Length: 454
Image (cartoon, rainbow, N blue to C red; front, side, top):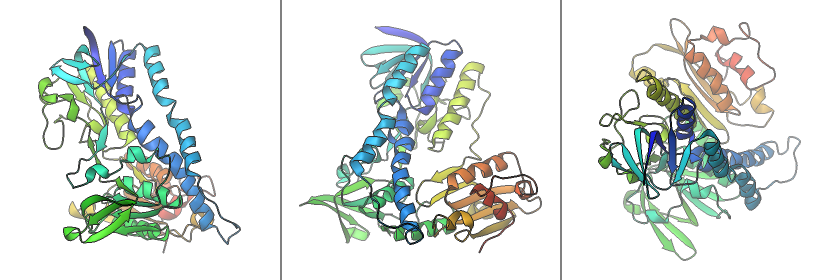
C-alpha cells in the first residue's frame, strides 16, 4: 500500500525529531522512520549515557585528587549499578518519542528506509510517497578493513556493558577514546589508547592536549602514539592486538573498543534509486543542506558530512532545513562559532580560531595564556592540570578564539562562544564591564582576558 505525505523524515534523533515536529506544527503531513530504537545517538548511544557514566568517574577522580586534603578512605564504582542508573535515563526514551509523535500527529514507521524513486521510499513493507524528504540518519562507527576488526566493541555497545573488562584497548585518539577511557580507568580497568599518528585530539590546541595527555597518564591511561592498528586476534583468555610497523607491538586485552571516528550512516538507503548523489565523503549537498541532484531531499545532523558531529550542530541543521522547507531556500548553516568539549578529566574545550589556523591565514593576534592549576577553582578540588589560551585580534582586542583545559571547561567555553558570536572584546569581559558570581570557574575569565597565569 502507498501512503502520501508532504514530508518524510528518516531518523528520529535530534535533527530528525526537530524537523518533523516543526514541519507538522506548520501544517504539513509528516511521517518519520527509523530502523533503530527511536531517540537517536545523543539520547541513546552518545551524550546522555556518556555523561551519566562520566559523572561517576568525576566523583572517583575528585576523591583521589583531594586525598590527604581532608578526604580519607577509598571510593569505587559499582559498574552494574552505574549502568542501571544510566538506563534510567535512556530506557524510557523510545516509548516517549513514539508517544510524542502520536500526540503531534506524526506517523511513525519502524524499519530500514530505502529509496525506490526520487519521491518514494519503502519502509517496513510500506511505500511512502512525499513531496520532500529529510535524511537525518545520524552516524555509525567508521568501517575498518583491518584483520579482526569484527572483534572490536563499538562505543554504542560499551555504554551498556553489564560487566567492565579488566584490560581495555581503545583504537584511535579522538573524542570517543578519551572520554570512555577516563571512565574505564576510574572504574578500575587497565586502559590503553593506540593512536596511529603522533598526535591525538587534532582539532584542539596541541599545548593543552599535551597537558591532557599528561593528566591521562597520571590517571593510569597508557597512550601510545604512532601505533596504527595492524590486526586483532582471538587468544586464550582474551584478544591480541598487533600495532605499529608490521604489527611488531603486541597488546593483550579483554576488549578492544572502536574509537576511530564515525561516518554518516547512509549506506542502506539505496540513494542511487532516489537520485541522491554521493561522493567519497557522503551525500553531496548545497549551501541550503539540499541534495544537489534531487531537490526534494535535504540532509541534517551527522548524516551531513559537512556538519560537525555534535548535538547542537544537529539542532542548527534542523533549524536551517525547516526554514528552507517552509519558506524556500534562504537559510545557510554557519558553523564558524561552534564550541566543542571533550568530557575527559579534566575537560578540554575550544571555540573559534586556533593558533595554527590564525598563523596559516596570516591573522595578527595577541595571545593570552597561562597555567590555571594554582588558581582557586582548580586548587579547591585538587586539580593538577588546568590551562587556557585566548586569541585576541591585535588591533581591536576582539576575541577570536578560546581554549580551556580544566574543571567546567565546557561551561566556560559557552561564554566565550557567545562573546565571539557578538564580536565582544577582552575589555567587555573584565570585572569592570560586568559582574560575575564569585567564587566560580567562570569568574576566572576575568583573569584570562587580562592575560594572567604562569
